Image (cartoon, rainbow, N blue to C red; front, side, top):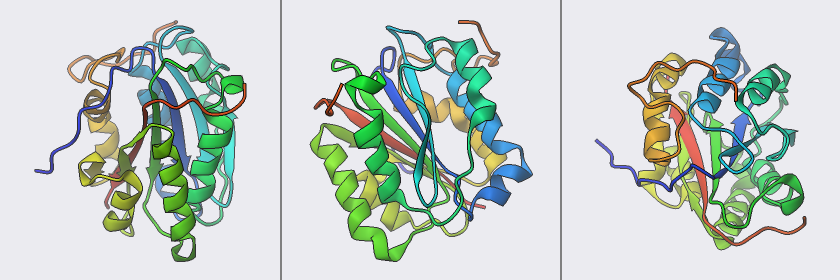
Length: 231
């Protein structure tokens, strides 16, 4: 089995959840009502709060769309209520645009990024590559690493390019692979427990249920996570 790198304490992390909604994944997400199910389960793993975990939401395809910024929803109930507002972008899978938006619009003081909190980017994608954009994608990933980034990778689908995603992550141990969307949802608590060994609201052995609850980029730890779902 492939080993993974254990991530930071997420009890006060700033997490950018970045979900691929390009044309190549629309059918996969819609078939299982997977997007909303995934988002709800992901959010429910954390103790959301002003001085605890903050999560922003972004979808992308031809462009990166910010659904909400880090400071928008600072309690669990508010964030879960916002899940249905996620927008499908469509078009090609432009990772460079997604990563650029994370760097310039998400991890900024004005969006709620905190200088003393670790940054984590969870990029969920089928791993389909736009070959002509590879240089730009890797350049954006490097810019995040230069700002203190640690990159994890998560992808899904039959066209996922493992070597390419490893280049974005910067380390093959930062990739998580599952066989399908339902299997991903089943194992997601374990994936998050590895990425964030402390700070989860729900542990893998505990049933999960909803519970009420500037400018420039800081140089600090940033983790980007992709979940690779191979069908």
